[in-house]
Image (cartoon, rainbow, N blue to C red; front, side, top):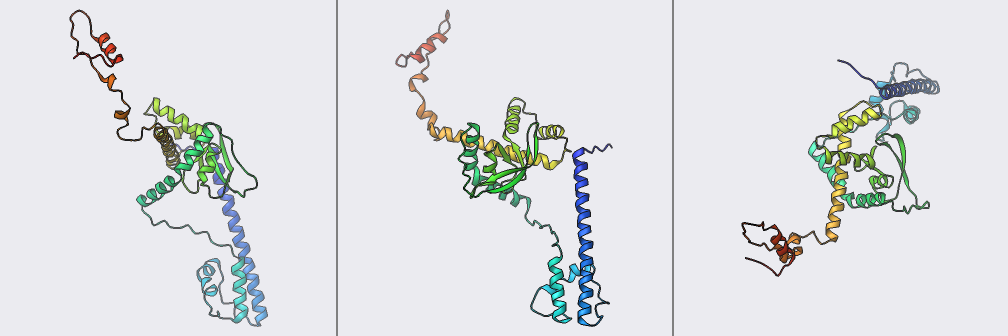
Length: 301
């Protein structure tokens, strides 16, 4: 089995190693600072009762809540209490990952509801981008700035700054610059609309060209290792892109009055439904049939 490691994956591994080493260095520095504060507190207290106490990282992380929560005064008096307050402020907070207890069905339903709430704004943003409508940006309005990784056909932009207006969904702000996020609320990956349009036309001409195939093509173009998560992200963005196109078609049919159940019957011409029942042995009846359809009052039964 051959393992292929791209340059981007090696860079990511190196970056993670540097971050881990920096955290270890900060932990050693905080431990040294805690030892100094401990010695100073022991000297000011006038006894060496702290020598038998172990203030390693594991012990402090397990029992630090006993000294910071509640109004009870910890042993050692107010001096030791101030020491633990100072050390707790200097320690870096531990990063804990939130455990998601929702089921897969609940997560998908939550994402679907979040997308449906912003579909009208996404349609307006897509039409403005498609027809090159002028943007009404106002520099006096306070805007939030977030960053996403932009994926295009041949270009990839890391940490692209996006300005988000007040009370505006993140994907609506992305559509103003020709991007569509892969998640409804806090997107970190965005696909360019040109890339989605290209894949849409490819699927219309060649239906067997799957999402996994286009994702592998993009990974090869950008020198990125293929992951299943990338395919799911592209699939989410493409599904919303198709829904935006369907909503545009629904708006057009609504304006033309074709949104009712009987619009075909109401808009049909009764005169054009006539059929000429002409049976001849010498000449075909196609010409007579077309003539009867063109002249509605002339019917041969």
